[in-house]
Length: 158
Image (cartoon, rainbow, N blue to C red; front, side, top):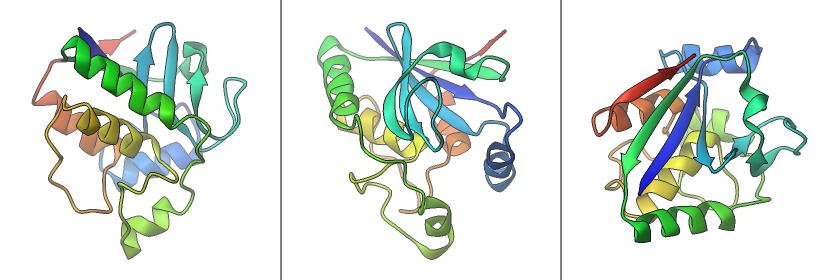
C-alpha cells in the first residue's frame, strides 16, 4: 500500500515565498494525500477549515506548482500513518516555528505543528522512513522533499 505526500510551490503568498527563499527551494508546503482530501498543518484558514491540522479539499492548492512523492508502505504502516495524522486533528499551527528555526526548538513537540514536521513525524511514527538526521529545529518542506526523493520518484503534477 502506498503513502503519498503532495508538496506545493508558492501560489503567490508572501509567507510562502519567504519559506521557499529561507529553504533555498521551490516548495513551501506539504500535505498528506488521504482519499480525496489533503491532510496537513496550515498557518491560515483555508479550504473552509481554520488554521491548524485538518482535512482540506484538494482545490485549496489550485494554481500552485505541485509535486507528489509516493512511498511504499505495508498495510500496517499505512494504518499507523493515518492514525498518527488523525490524532493530530485540531492541533494548532506552530506560529513560533520561524523564530525556532533561529533560536532552536524540538520539531517533535506534539502540541503544535508546521506542515513538514507533521508529515515527517507521521512517516517516522509509522516506520515508513527511518528517523531523519537533521538539526532538531529544521525540517522544512524543501528538506523533506529532498530526503524523500532519495527513496521514491518525484512526480510533477499539471
